[in-house]
Image (cartoon, rainbow, N blue to C red; front, side, top):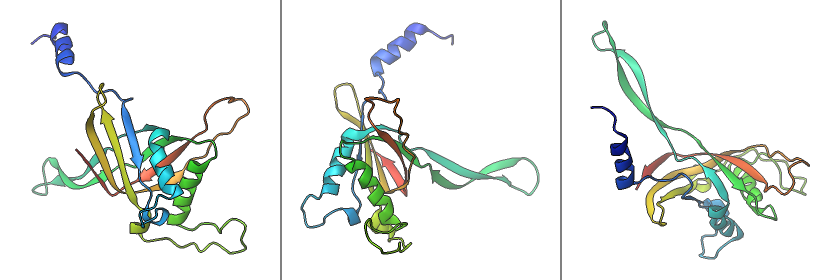
Length: 192
């Protein structure tokens, strides 16, 4: 069957397409940064504001891991599925005017593994890590259509940051918002 441009255009017109700039990303504060008695903490407020500050994110991907296997010990090989692997995701965040969002991510990473002492104290770092249930959280990536309806929701479970990337500061970048990158890992995800 030869390619027909009218059939292609008709398919796009009839079924439409999603756009990659119509999304919202929500990252919820982990338990150790969040208040459990129902009151909103500053970290919960920052977590709520992140939905306006995450200016780029990649939807999670998945890779099936396999090994070459000779079914009868000889002959052609076949791929044998062994596991699934989720790739870490990176987000870009626009800082707020007082740097609270930047501090939020720093506090989260420091709360996972105490690599430094508290500012202004003479205490040494403990170099201890928390339990994963204390420092992991949930993240949602919502994809919208052109009228603002949620089409897909990616829910990532047991999410936590693994790095804050270096932030370039330059006298030449006048009137540019300060952006910084965060790498996140997670246990699993599902799509609704």
